[in-house]
Image: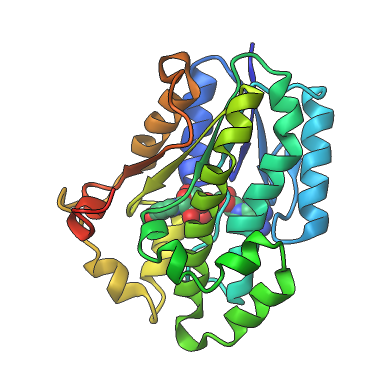
Length: 257
Ligand SMILES: NC(=O)c1ccc[n+]([C@@H]2O[C@H](COP(=O)([O-])OP(=O)(O)OC[C@H]3O[C@@H](n4cnc5c(N)ncnc54)[C@H](O)[C@@H]3O)[C@@H](O)[C@H]2O)c1
């Protein structure tokens, strides 16, 4: 049996992915705020450190896979918390658990980014340098000064930075024998999306965000891509981002890929 740590296991894409991987026979160590094997708050440095330690203790120091789904939408306040979970929550688990993955069998990891990662490119990402430097105070100050669009900035900025963080790790992780990729969903029917739709600041824009395939995804449609990337058929896929977005990225940026 292989062991996979999975954050955001209680809801939405994480819950669907945990179910898909468990159905394939994997043991899942779920990480979430509550109702999980590892209960931890990834918005704080202490919570992130506790999550790493508890996963290590539950897996005996050996992991075969990791899927990072935990995340907050643009509607959450303060906006700095969005960046804390979406960026620091992911990179702390990646870096803290790489040694355990190196000891695993055919190890692979997937981070759930977003189609929003390409809406705010790296050279225009006001949070990029502070996130990469691990400067949480600077991230909070930029978010606090961003006015009514702070939530969108924190969401798109943290998703852009987490995709960059994965790509920057491609050389070291490849040499370490651990595959690492991102999946970038478009709109998916989950509680996160519903909360965004209900938010007076962002609801209309999310409603207007219609993909060429004119519907939203079900969580299982993201989980199936993640399960594929975790498996042996994806053995040469590394350092890549896969849009599962009904064609939104191709519509918005046909010449950039
Ligand atoms: N739903 C969409 O339309 C959509 C689109 C693109 C990307 N995404 C990304 O997919 C991922 C999963 O989102 P979802 O739509 O399934 O949302 P969701 O709200 O259904 O699930 C998110 C999970 O993360 C957990 N979480 C949140 N804050 C946490 C914290 N501080 N510590 C530990 N766990 C925490 C929640 O408890 C929840 O179980 C997120 O990273 C999100 O940004 C979602």
